[in-house]
Length: 424
Image (tube, rainbow, N blue to C red):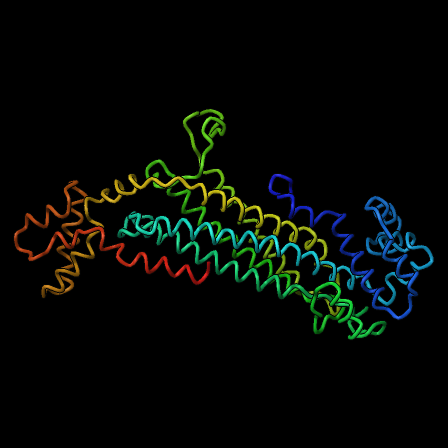
């Protein structure tokens, strides 16, 4: 992933140095659980080093990255290097090391997922009673509260956090089962001991590789978390439109520039960036799904794609989560504009309350619906408040004070938002 979208802590996990260091950890742990190496040989193996440059130079000869790495590490260990990679095949090292890397990446992603839930819940609680319009199909529907709106996003973020936790847990596996997964040169007990040193579970049946449905599940979960971030970003983008302007991204006045040509612009660039990057996550999830069907016990058709999609997806999700955290924490919320927008339909958004009151008074639902639909449309068309139109009729027995009470719509808001206590 390009530096622009890479946060340092996550980016460090996917460098060539980090990848080969994970390989080294697997090779050393494997030697530590062997019966062959003497104590002084183990000391030499633990002290063995490599450089990325040396491995790359060797790979130019071997045309095999793991073989090149083993050559360099073994040479550094001296005579004891004969034990390095003893009884192992490349996938034993690659897949097990990948499990180690994914575990470290998961810690970072899950910390960000937790923080996102927290900041959304904080804003939801702060605005539990902030009345605003609710929209369906992009059209004014009925009043809600901004706290209820944000509580929904917080709950979704919590579900994505929980799904991510489960997805990282199921991919935290390794295998040292040999060329076709029969333990011909190792044993299940040896595998368990080595993996215990690395904090991984053993893949029950690994053939030669860890089955790629595990990695596909992870990237599908990452894509779903990205879709949740996109939904949040899309909402904020809509609310920042000039015609709406109920909430907007933070903007550093006097420093940030919204447009190179138009100084007045404050564009929702951060949420637009989240929206665009979520598409990359979905594409990567598709590639991960296609990686599942390998030939027989193993091929490497998954390898090239995986070296791109796994680090890129986790780097992007980490970045996108922290963009969202920054936006939600600094969200500029205009409560006065929310109140103004509630009046754009001239009271038509109270139509259901009027409908129910007429039905409760004894009128048939269809007759009541037709009356309210006609009067609501008239309110909108003539820019006359619906309450005035209903009062002027004189043939309807309605408690207009109660019907047009905005407080009615937020009376359960506290109860709804309190449900967040179960997740944060």
